Length: 348
Image (tube, rainbow, N blue to C red):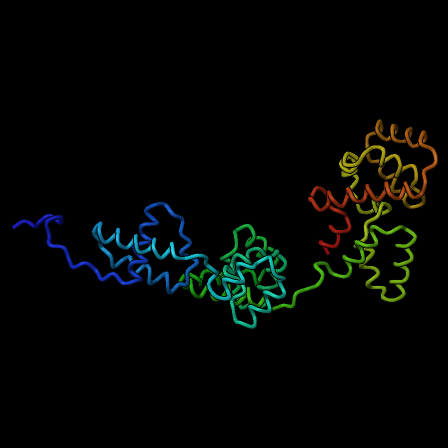
């Protein structure tokens, strides 16, 4: 006898509708309606249970489906407000509203994972910091970290490592084929927790950068006096601060002549005229450097304006030179030019 079509076979008994199974039905209904469910944020144990429950359900009749949906809507309607689940959920909800140091202390005391997505936090680290992290880890762990990074960043990091170590880590990647997702997540959590366990710093920049930034905006006489005092106290620190400082007089030694036209276009001509007209000593040498590295026509026009301007007050000249330095710093921050001293330091 030929096999009966499936639609005339006797159906198997309907599965028992436990609360978990009802939840699986609701998830299936929402998926069919096109809802975007963040199921990956559930604990892995719940993800597994949900998958098994959905796999156990073959079909349910319309009456049962309506009953489950009705029950779900009734429960949903009785909820006045929901709060994030547990301490971890509360910390995630308050992210950015309480201080990082407070959040880190609460997480540490309660044993709550530092990051819901540790690999997202790790991928956001600067290249230098990632190199430092990988230097302190076993090659197998470094291989996992490298594998979880975007390819351009991973290539940049590999290029900053010593040849033998880079080769060993690259080989270790070939041994990661059978590693399971849970182990990768555990490694990510451990690395993120280790990074977050460092005490919060009160200042984002180091002392050299902070002193340099302050002196950059200080009057020349005060700046020279402070530097002289620093040299008496700590010559090494004073030298580092000098490197961090960039003033108008530093232009000839730290600016590529080819960048001068770019800089002069970034500031008003009246500012250039005032700075050139009031420049004295080393500042005057910087002014000549600027004029020598622009078109002869424009340089002559500026010289004529300087002559017409006459005597410039020292305060006005210093303000104009400060505006030019600020424009150079902005262009440097935007990657439009590179200070020559910085390039030399990198090469060393």
